[in-house]
Image (cartoon, rainbow, N blue to C red; front, side, top):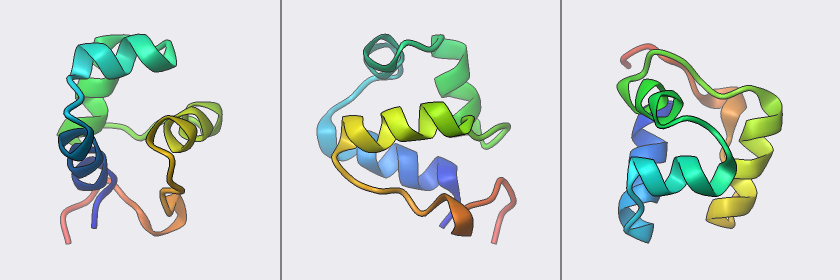
Length: 68
């Protein structure tokens, strides 16, 4: 599963908006949109914040920005 799909699923499960997630972890809403669009993935320090925020460990090693 692509990072964008994983993030979208986690956000949906938590009822999270792009704006709220961005505010909670201290990034721009544009950054969250880029992640969801599959244009970029977050840097390691932001990945740690996402893991903590969602209470899970996202397997970034098996994530990419390409369609399967």
